[in-house]
Amino acid sequence: MGSRWFARWDEFVRRRSLLAASILLISAYVTFTLTSILVRVAAEDVPILMIIYIRQVISLLIMMPFFIHQRAAIMRSRHFKLHSLRGLTAIGGMFCGLTSVTYAPLADVTAIQMSE
Image (cartoon, rainbow, N blue to C red; front, side, top):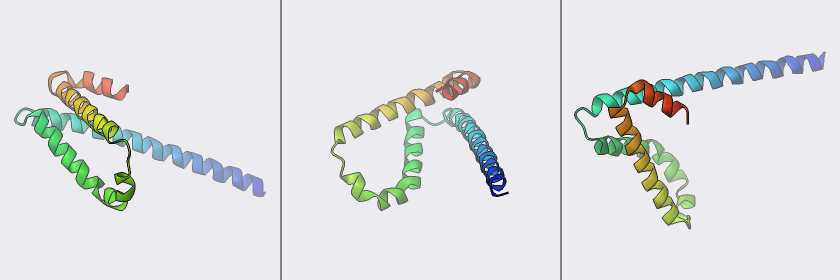
């Protein structure tokens, strides 16, 4: 009796996890698509670098509570040059990605972004 209960419980947890993963995946795709549409619309009036700046400021505001909580660990990094290089390549990649969203067909850009 007990082993059957555990088997049912494991199956329930597995299905629930799969459902949660599916919902998160679909939410991510919807978010990426909406972001691409918003960037395309905004890029008609706003330069790409300004969009990147606004995006980074919003990200910083969202992450600020975590930064404040972990500031000691963040400031202990011995690889400042590598972190700077990573930041610069991230901004370069963001510039290329957002520029492609602006000029290339949206379906092609979305397919390429989802294949990563």
